[in-house]
Amino acid sequence: MFLTNVLCKKVKSKHILVLVESVASGHKRIKMRERLADKIEEVQFDPYVRADVIYRELKKVKSL
Image (tube, rainbow, N blue to C red; front, side, top):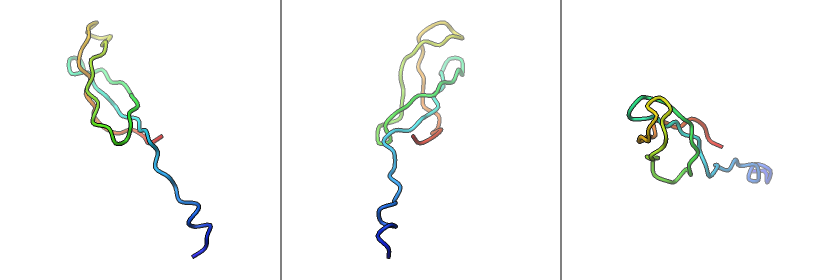
């Protein structure tokens, strides 16, 4: 085995982009979180309802 194969391993990133969706209206946003953290569930302003609502994580979009 060559030394270059060992040195060229790809390192996993620490953060990922995830898609979060509003519980009230279905409005979607993309947020960044750490790979090892729990799924996102947070209260933010929803422009469709014009109020603060809960946004829940749907799926992973991309690794950074």
